[in-house]
Length: 439
Image 1 (cartoon, helix red, strand yellow):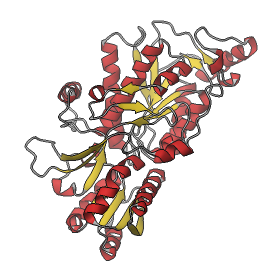
Image 2: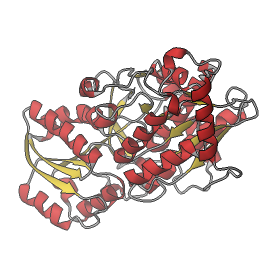
Image 3: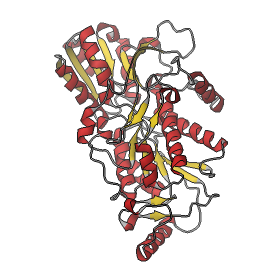
Image 4: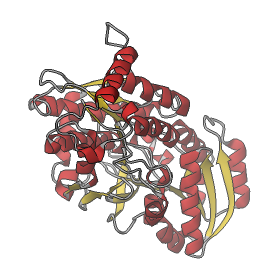
């Protein structure tokens, strides 16, 4: 999709950068402490009639296509709500989307194009952690503020953190912290891991393994699940033969849907305890309840008995009356909340200057009421991950309302599930070394 015409944007950008470098121009409102390498600094007119353009970097194909669509719907509802109130800083907010295809290389190309050709002020979106990491490397090169809405590898706010990147989902360590000790106490110490064979799966299972061993459990086997797996018969035979008390699965997207269906067909969902580190709503929506075995983590549920939740669901249904998914889930929620807080940060900063927006996001605190969660949330300024309530849930076998598929079993505060490892492995670039711009 390319909705611009005229001269090549790459040529225009090159001329702008050359002018800045030769003249040593610093735009009004950009503090010198934020200045990075001149070759990438961008200073564009922020006229009141010029829209603020956001690049959406979510999947429309590949393993996470369904989640990518839900992610985008959340972003678009937040944008629509701001535009209905007059936009941001008196400017309309517009979006442009390219499919990242659940592929890191595509994510890199999309990010480069959105920044250099389309002059996007911000980038938002991710489900695959590998794709998010690729996008964030390009974003950091240009200083473009990037919101990773829905990928949850611990490395995203750990060793792969960046000054421009903010992570809005709970990560694998957070969900494992909420689930592992209770599962050992309840079901037993003999565990088996099923792991999607890419960055999120590996790092999530590693976090689970560490906690299982810390609490006296034993990992008897780890089965790797290649992305795109649709036949789990050989893997599930290994599960039967190992006869664990607990299976901890870090399997996502369409892979997880196929796994759940086949586990249920073989009756394995009742023969042992299943702990799914995180359960994204688009992965299970519409499945029979007997496919929704085990205990799983989430950041939000549409039937939470909290202020604002019912109204949020009504706004979703009014905006998306023809969407197959009749109620919002955690992926939509994360996309919406990230976009809302970004636009709010721009308003508080009074500018699109990336350094000032970054500082606003680093100091973000959101009340439980505004988050529609049980605990206040805050951005960890050291890792750029949103610290929030983590829920454990299971299938609701006595549902009285259509689509009420979950029963929420517990909620944990941000401090109860904090990922201290991320604080030790994250090393954010300085603002001085991050390129600057104002759109």
